[in-house]
Length: 125
Image (cartoon, rainbow, N blue to C red):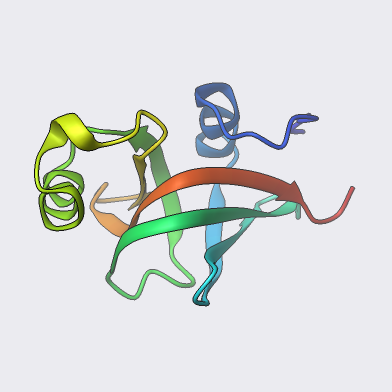
């Protein structure tokens, strides 16, 4: 069972999801944020809310098993998005990162969001 009391997203939280066989349930896009709904095999439902959106890349991952979830500044899409939005990497706030959700079996990205802030809400506490 995942125990998580902090709303901020971090590596420990991401690792706990990777180790709990999760499914990407839904992605909601609004002008203010992107909400990513995920459910683990033991019915723990949570959402990751991304705000300060700079970019979104999706490949119809809803319903797919999730493998790796990464929070990074080193993906090709991150660099492309930063170049488009900021011009040069030097002007990018340290808070801007890329959340990459990969499919479980082939470990290919099914969703990538470049944003300034990420929060987690556990939906069935």
